[in-house]
Structure formats: C-alpha cells, structure tokens
Image (tube, rainbow, N blue to C red):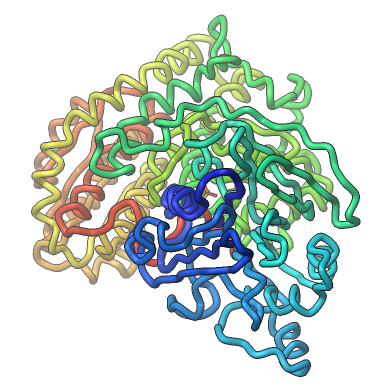
Length: 613
Ligand code: F6R
C-alpha cells in the first residue's frame, strides 16, 4: 500500500527513483510523484495521477528533474481521491521540506486542527501533509532532532522518506509499522519499501526496525534511535535471483507466477539449505517443538486475510483430518476485535505472503499479548511478521509481484500439509503405510501441477466463452469448499466478474434463486466421500438452467452426466487435491481477465500489501 523510494549518490537521482518505483508499483498505482534536490539546493518536483508511466513521460524519464538526491512515491489512496494535490511528495509551505509516506497517521485530524490554528494551510486531503507541516514547525536546522520530535507526536504507521533543501547532501528515512529497507553500493545509498526496488543496484540491504531513523549520504550511512543515539546495524546480503522479480518473457507476472508454482512447491518441501523431507520423515526445525509439545497441542488457531485465509481453510481440513487437532480459522480483521478465547494448549498460526498485512500483524500481537507464542507462515524473508512471530516457517515461493496471489498461496498449502503430516505422525493418528503414501503424494505435486498448467490452451478456449459473464458461482464440499472460496476470489479480483463461493449443500438455502439460464456454476468435486452429494447439487443447478463446469479426480467419468464441461485432475489423496484443483481455476480467472482486457497484474482498487486495516 504505497511504495516509497529514495536515492542519494553519484548518479542522477530521478531515473533511479523511477526505476525503483516501477518495481513497487504493485503496492499502489493511482498516482505517483517525486522530489529532487538540485545541485544548487533547489527542491523541484513533479506529480501525476495514474500509472507511473505518466510521471515518466512528464519528466522525460526523470531528465527534467536534475539532481543527485531525491525521494519518490507510488500511491494507493487512503485519504482523499487520486489527484495531483493528494499525490506525494507533500511539502511545507515554502517547499523546502518534502516527505513521502507509506502508512496511516491516525491522529492526523487533531494534528491538522492544531497546525491550522497556528496558521498552516493545507492543500490536500491526505494524512501525510500534517507531517510536512510538523517538520516545518519544529525545524531549526537539525533534521534528526526535528524528525524525532515529530515521531513523538504522531500516532499510526509510517515509512517516510524526507529531504530538506538546506541539507542537499542527505536524505532521511524512518519507519514505524510500515516496511522500509536501506541499501548501499559504491555509488550511493537507497531507501525503498521493498527490496526489488533496489536489487538492480545493490544486494546489500539494512532492515530498518520500528522507530529507527536512517540518514543517507552519497557515501555514508547512519542509523539512529528515536533518542538520537547512533546505532550499529549489520547488513543482509540478498541472495535471490534478480530475475525472480522480472517478467521473464511472460505477458503478465500472474502467468509467470502460476508457472512458478511447481518450483514454489518443491522449494517449500525441500528448501535448499534445510530440506523438510528427510529419511522418509518430515523435519520442520523452525517449529522447534518436541514430540511431547506436539502431543500437548489441544487446539490450533489459524489467522489470516484473503487468499492466505483460504489456505488456512484448507489447512483446517487437512490438520483436523490427519492429526485430529481441532482447528479454528479466523479472518484476521475479525479475530483482532472479537477478544478471541485462546485456551491453554493452543497453537496460533498466522499466514501471510507479504508478512506486512496490518490485520494479520495485529492478530499476531494480540495472541502474543495473551501469552501465546505465534508461528508465522510467511513468504517475504525479513518482513515484519517474520521478524515479530515467535517461530517462522518460510514458504519459499520467491518474490510475488502480481497483486493476485498464486504461487505463494500454493506454497502456503504445502506448509500446512507438512505441519498436518508432522503432527499426525507424532501423535500417531496415521498409520505408517498411510504416512508413506502421503509423503509420496506430496512429492508428486510439483509434476502434477506442471501437467495441469499444460492444459492452459483448453482452459483459455473455455474461459473465452465467459468474458461477458455477469455472475459465476463456485460450489464444493469439505476441502473443496476452501478451493471454491479461493477460485471465486481469483476470478472477481482480476476480471471484475461477480463470483461467489458456496458450500455446495448451502446453495438451496437461498442462493439457488440466482441461477438463470446459462449461469456458470463450477463444482469442485475432488472429495471422494462427498462426491455423490456434490453431484446431486450439480444436478439441482443444471436442471435450473446452469451451465456446470466440474473439476474432479481422474477416472470420475460418470460426472459427465451432471456436468457440461469437465476438468480432471491427476490422482492424489483427498487432503492435497486442493493444490491441483486450484490450478485450472487460476488459469480460468486469468484468461477471463485477459479476454476482457483487464490490467491483470494491477487490478483496480487493489494493492499487493495491505498495510492498513
Ligand atoms: C488475493 C490476495 C489477497 C492476499 C491478502 C493477504 O489474490 O493476494 O487476498 O492473500 O491480502 O495478504 P498476505 O498474504 O500478504 O498477508
């Protein structure tokens, strides 16, 4: 949600900032802006509504804003519509201080009232503008002191990039509860909301902790606490491949990331430095739990948002089914406000691709405050949730850029299967033979996903028929219901086709009245024990005019009587079928969106990391 970047060094800042913003556009893309300090200490800037390319054109690739230091921003509007006035950077009245912000200032109304009484004029509807005026109010020539004074007075979350025209050799950055990394190479220093923005220039990064301040110069880097004490920080070397964050010949990141699912699954099963499948057993070192502790688990709470919540729903079926531990799954935005009852013996698991999601992070804090250590299943290494959780089990999906998640979701499923199998093994709720079968099945998933991806042309042809669809329904029972939820989300978020998921047995309690001649109903029918029941629900909707697409296991031929179109998935056990059934559903959503000409990687109104509640 909003991306910030900054650069100071030997090179022209504006083109570097534009390049960084391009890599952060997934965080927000309704407007953009940058401010540069020129050689003679003059602060110049440009802002534009719309995608980053508008700013790029307006500044001729940055060449119209000369200077070696600057900050930039790509926005996802929270306070005020996308407009030039609301776009960042924001300035003090004299335009000598500029600030870019990712986060939300919660007490901005009180602060704005106070500043207005003191004669400050506001030009935007944003919460950020108060920061520019507060910096102005306290500024007496010492940027560090001014920033800490402001930090003591603002509430909320922020990652800020700040420049002062009378300190043209420095840029400042500070964070609280919003992500911020600082990087360095021989030619300069960088700030960004996320590593890919600087990967082209450096792999040496510093993760800025809450309420720390960074002062960047062309060839120096200093970190300070809120008490203005200088801090020693160790850099982290980023070891992922820079190409991982590039499209690599695919039309969209989403398509590329769907194709990376086999790899994401393999890496999550067998991380290079620490395989989780060893000697026919499952070893999850980061769980750091003895067999006695695993046996003592009485309940599991899984908390997450969006697709990660859907992965958690699948997790519930597999953990309850295999390990016989009761699992409660919550949306983080609900969990954090309902004073949840977490009882002795509970294990709390939060799931997050970005590791930044505000509600999930708060759910984590809440559980910790109740005395329960939290296991985070996280994709972004070093992210807030990864750092703050008591234990972290990484999904090794690599950087995910498309706003709609695919490979990270698939990796989350794998992490949950591994936990379920581990718990089941230790608690003796599965036989040795069945455990062996599960181990074989889970290792077959990458190849099976690959096979399903090969059917993309067929799915594209089918999807093309639904480009004009108004409503699409997804139904399923048991674990298939979790896949139905994720399938419906994929379709609606990228193609803007209204879609809903229902537990198949629930349809006739109201929703069936929406079925009209030709309405597409997708039935997920991979759970053999529930198969006939789902087929009955298919017959019910088909007889009311629905066009029924079925996704079922290889060999289920008789389903053709109840379905108009059938997609078969390769054979696996009932717990892991979700990993396969979701693949054609992702492809379907992708091709409907492609056919409609939607902006697939950056759907309207969305952002990749939801750092506000
Ligand atoms: C949907 C999607 C979102 C995220 C949700 C949680 O395709 O990507 O629903 O799953 O915003 O995000 P993370 O996993 O980063 O906490």
